[in-house]
Length: 193
Image (tube, one colour):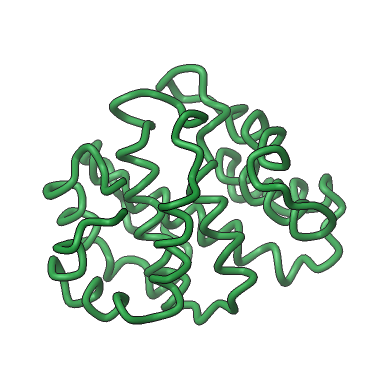
């Protein structure tokens, strides 16, 4: 259950509250497998829950349809389940991608798009196309935005490390959410789940 005061913290969050994107966030918050998340202060449930909120805001700004929004919520929820520690680890996305089928029950192209986005989040942007090809994604135009939005949602929560560099964000509508990311971190350092 998401805290009631979440929606009052910033105008962006207030504008999200009564939308299908908030509904997708609420649904994911109720169904997430907390027992499968990596347990740590940096990449644990607190980080994951903030990335989910930021992902819902980005989905709204990108005007994603319901299906892609659900995939983004899954990606935000499970992108770090492959972590073994908090160090820099370009392989944790691959390990997480191998687990998302079991965690979500997805199959076919939705699963391939989700796996590609999750693996790509820990790879350099130049390798994103290779990752999408690796998973046999039939519609790259569908999967590419998913991967970039996950990277932006995850990137916004770098405020917790005081290491957010807006020049690395991939969409023009992402940097204006930096204040919201800071507010989420300050109010919910342990997360909203």
